Each structure stands twice: as C-alpha cells, then as structure tokens.
Amino acid sequence: MTCGTNEWACFSSQQAAGKALKAVYLSLGMEAWGHDLTNLLRGLRELAGLRIHRRLRECAAELDKHYVISRYSNGFAEGRRGSTTRGRTP
Image: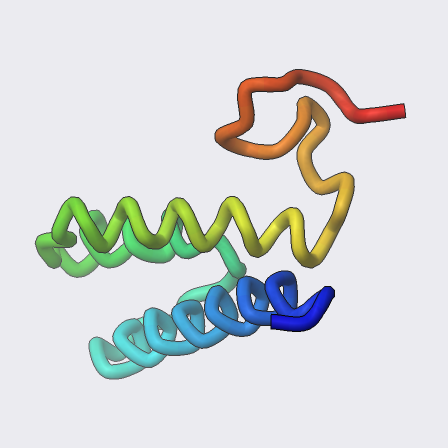
C-alpha cells in the first residue's frame, strides 16, 4: 500500500460497516444515528433483542478505534483508544 492508503482503508471499512448495521436497523423498522459501531451493535442487542457474536463486537471495536484516529488525528483526549501511552504528543 502507498502512504496514506491505510487510513483511507480504515475509514472506508468503518463507514461500510456502519451502513450495513444501519441497514439492519431499517430492515427491523428502526432508525439508527451515529458512527460508533460498538454502540450500533449494542442498540441492536438492547432494542431488537438480537444476539451479537463476541467476534463481531471485537471487530467493531477495532474498526471504531482506527476510524476515529484516521478521521480525527487528535480524536481521543487521552491518546489513541487501546494504546498504552497516555496524553497527546506535543
């Protein structure tokens, strides 16, 4: 991959997953807002009573982590989600 392609791939993947989850909501006659895949899955579990496989939740969390940092380079006030470092770099 060329420089910059990784961030675009992360962003596009997260967006595609979000669209797919929102399509599930629509198919159930419900609406969904937002970009947080983890919250969208949680809503399907809580509002529609769907069982969400653990691996799907893990993948959603991973995409969320990469989405925010690819879209907003300073999106986390305390560093990247899932990183071992704290705080923003100067």
